[in-house]
Image (tube, rainbow, N blue to C red; front, top):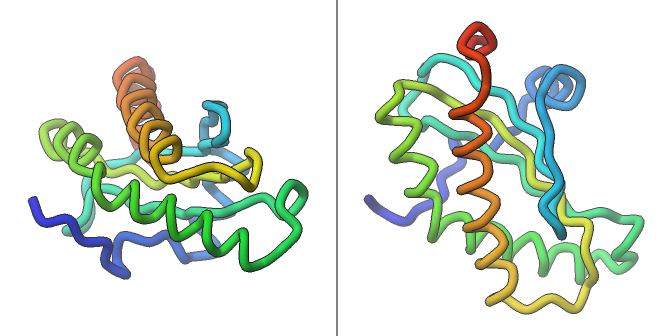
Length: 135
């Protein structure tokens, strides 16, 4: 699998984002808060992601942008974990990852937490009741 992060893999629709935050499931895996919603497979990419950094904890925009860049890179390198699961079960997943930790976090910690986050998301998808697996 190619390690790319295309525009179609990003969650941008305000309608979908509102649905995600109001009707989606969530969990906290420090330093991330994850909201997710699952549906049947629709497009070429089985997962779409929204990455954000809390303005409350990190005041400077340059630091927030730097953390978003690191999170995107860690996701880009490790998204195959989620893609393999979603492709095998013919599902799609929209999710948001909000960074709520401290501004002085290095890339190794971020990548390790993103891997744990993806594994936790897969386990959440497995344990979700079958009747809720459609949008």
